[in-house]
Every structure is written in structure tokens, then in C-alpha cells.
Length: 316
Image (cartoon, rainbow, N blue to C red; front, side, top):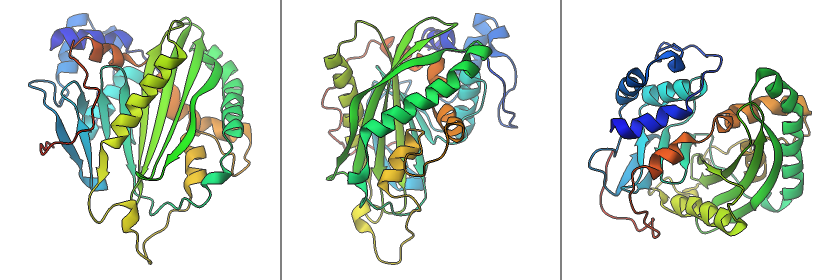
């Protein structure tokens, strides 16, 4: 296990802290390699030893998430906060589950906001969304340069926002070219929103790519995120189709939700500076590189292509 954990801390960088009584507050990079491994070993890694394919039950959402034997994860908030502190310099106050897969890192948050309507789906304009994302990055660039951090030079769609009516899920994927103190890099971000009766699961996938990564390969990787999402099932009584008159209805419909997930406010017409905060909070960790993708690859486990064939194996 320590050999794998050794790869994890290679990507950990120190930023300005956000204090919490639940995390150890110190500069992780000041530790020796052995000390770093010891600290990482204190986290409660799930499905790491004797891994199996299983359904993970996320109680607060009343949904099951299918986990492959090649994937391991953190589910306790304290561990997620501590890992985020060591990687990013601030705690993760929102995600309920962080999954480390062979080619990407997956962040899952359940938002109990009520039933999300889908009436305005056709009002979404992908061109407007990507242009606002670029506008945000341009506004943020001088701040990141001043801090000595990497900044985004270019953003492009891999997959424009699409809606899966059968699963009541939205998929969107884009790639970013980075530059700055830590050199040039490329990342691909894919987001999924899975709607339930009382709220939705917000899922972010990230991975590092290279200049040699073809467009075909990018789309194949984005499809892995889609396959992962297909393995998420809201249980009876909590499905989007289970909505009944009188249920709480979310303030945002699907159009506003997609814009908010991408960190833009197209539908509310706010200024650039107002958009920066939610965007950078959601994507700051991409600047530091998705180290878990390297970790997953080090396990040398064969990835199942038919990943979402559910089995009667539960584990929580």
C-alpha cells in the first residue's frame, strides 16, 4: 500500500489554508517521504485491500453507486477533508464521496434541493456557456499569475451538454490547456448531473491528458464517465419519475443547474467578477493536477469495459 501512496503525495502542493477542527493543519510538503506515507496511511481507504465490484449505498441520496474492483475511495468526511487539505491547501466541504479510478478522479456530491424540472433544457446554448467559461478564466488569469499558480489558456468542448431522458442525467465534457509556474499541461473535465425526486447527484470527473491524446481518445475517456454515471441508480421512491404533487421543487431548473455546475451564470446575467468565486472553488484542484489518475494506473488492474453490469453485491 505504501508504494501506491508514495505516488499520491508527489502531486500534493501547499496553498493558503481554510481552518477546520477536523483536519491536521500543517505544510504537508515539509514532511519527509516516510512521514508523508505514514500520514496518508491514516486515511480510511475503501476497496483498497481485497477490492471487489460492489454497490455503494449513499444513504443521504437513497441511491446506489456501482464501484469496480479497480476503484478505491474515501467516504468519511473527515478523510475527504484531510485529503483535500493535503492536496489543495483547503478542506473539501461539499463532496460526499471521492473515487480514485484508473484514468480519472471522481467527486460526488448530493444536493438535497428538491425536484429539478427539465422544461428549459432546450434553452441551453453551448456556445454561450463555453464563451462565459473562457471569460471567467481570462478574468482569473492575472490573479493566478500573481500567486504563481498555473492558469487556463484555452477551453474547448469535448462533448457539449447532452440530456439522457432515460436516466434523467446531463453529461458535459471539456478540455483545458494550462500554463504557468508548473509548466504546460492539459486536463479534461467531465460533469454529470443525475436527477432524483428530492435533489440530484453532482459528479465531476477529471484527468490529465497530453498533447498526443487524440480527440477520439478524449471522447472515449468521456464515455467512461458516462458509463460510470449509468451505474448510479436512485432507489424506489427517490427516482425522478417518483415525483408527486406537493413535493419540494428546486429553485433552479435544469438549464440554470447546468450553468451553475459549469461555474457560469448565463441565465442570470451577472458580471464576470461575480462568476469567479464559484468557478474557482469548483476547479482549483485541477491546477494541481489529478494525481489520483496516476495512482489508479499504478495498480496494474485490468479495467472492465462493461463497467455497469450491476451485481447483487452491496458494500457500505
